[in-house]
Length: 212
Image (tube, rainbow, N blue to C red; front, side):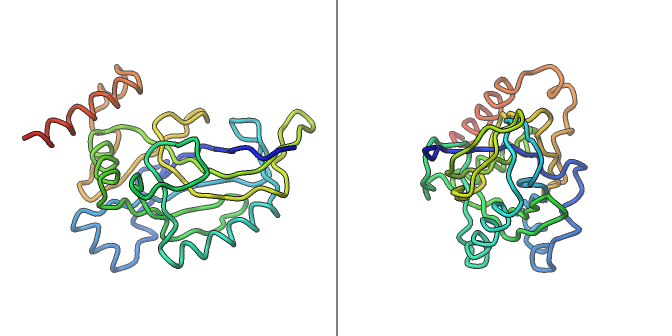
């Protein structure tokens, strides 16, 4: 089968307070100065996900090991939104994976939101209470078997992007930022507006601040 762009969606910090446990002393100081860090599950092995795909652990272990080189070199960038592309566009980079490790069958990641144009938008969306998810992006082929699509050995992990509308039910994140704000800071906003409405309101707020 031919390779295709494969994307998956997960949540970060489901309890909203997991960030501080894994921050270094230097990162704690960065956080006090306004840097936002996110921690949580980035991928899972051996489990049928919301897109009906299963990633064999040996395939995911190999790709995570390769990806660790990018992490060590501070080149593990991701974009805001999901392009239909296998190339990471630096002008759209919003965050950096600074650590990645295994917890059972789950691939965990620590993410630093960058002070780039896209990173500033990401931080503003977070502070406006918009729920966001993380999504892996890779190239590979899949094979249908036993009611699931198994990702084959030719899979290549590209990066992890931040997205607004995950396909996995409940795949959103709670965030503990330097401001102490999370998506629960305005419950009525979350309950009464659709995801698209929330994003539109957040972007309008950002544009207002930019034009001041």
